[in-house]
Amino acid sequence: MNQIDRAINDFNMLKKSGKIIVGLSGGADSVTLIHYLKFGLNREVIACHINHNLRGEESIRDMQFVVEFCKINNIQLFIKDADVRDYAVKNSLTIEEAGRAIRYDFFHEILLSQNADYIATAHTLSDNTETVLLNLTRGTGLSGLCGIPPVRGNIIRPLIYCTRQDIEDYCANNNLRYVIDSTNKDSNYSRNNIRNNVIPVLKQINESFETAILRNVKILRNDQDCLQQLAKVVFDDCKEVSGYKVDRILSEHEAIRNRVISMILDENAIQKSADLILNIDGIIKATKGKINVAPKKFIEVNNNLLKVTIEKNPIDYFEDELKMGEYISKAGEKYKISKCEIKNIDFTKKVYRNLLYILLDYDKIKGTAIIRQRKQFDTIEFENRAGTRTLKKLFIEQKLSAYEKSKTLVFADDDGLIAVFSLGVSKRVAVDEKTKTVLLIEKVNY
Image (cartoon, rainbow, N blue to C red; front, top):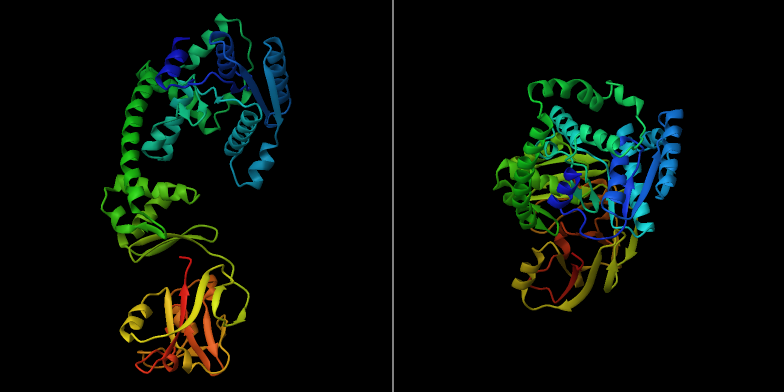
């Protein structure tokens, strides 16, 4: 078929000569696809069929048809029996989403086991038209209006230029039997409603409506590719070890910002939605805010940085003797504890202001020093600050989560608290002009 050859060439679908995994439902589209790949292009194909167990006896009929078809045409076949309804409930998915997830998991499983190069699905121009219209009603934006991608990784869609009429003509010309899904007539399903009721009306306005959609999709896909490339530059530019630079994102047009946000969500395995992207853009423009994006997962904007944080369960109470050398906290953070003679007081004050270090006058420590977690009535009087403060209030002011509070290192001696990492040092053990020996506590794995 000219349309199949043209799609394969336009999108460079078959660069390798290896095996092709074909999703074979038994319908006209998939029968056309596997027949043309095997007999029209002389490619090695492997069929995969999933019994979704959604249509009772009809599902069994489809499976039996596929078995017979592959036997007659000498095609290797793999079948999966799936409980799609149960999978949907357990994973909080729609039936359509669950079926798709099961199918592609199965396709990739067979791809690996059979050392194949491609997965071919039988999506047509008519399917693409339905998808574009469905996405238009859902307000998915430019990416949704680009429809079904002809190539995505090792997944190819050689029928993407073929209308439903092209498929039916191919089956008639090659005496190919196929099964018909009776649920296709049920317009209670959104896609079927568009197929059965909306598209026929649009074709009355323009007989070549599907071709017009294809033309629009090509234009929109080029626009989308261009915007994605521009956004990728910004995304790479704004990335830092601990988050994403807000001022760099803010310097761009909203269209680029939204795509950068989408990339951030993808990188952090967060499910996307138009509303979520809009809300994140809002706190970026405000340069401050926090949004719950998933169970125990947050996006926070503060101090010119967008961070994705995961709320962990608080750490159980700990208490260790302070010893020189390496210390690994219960949160897995590494610290170096050392003491040394000090002569340059100006240097020590400069180092102290770096939050990765704290310095104490070693000779002022009373008795045995320990490292522990905060206790309920802990108080401390920091150097250069007036009054005694409770750690409870200090942690609230710092807006620390329960986990962050539980992992914060508190240092104490026989007379009480001497430091909190990295909030500061107690006034009674602070380094001054009389200090001879300092205790240096340094965070080293940052």
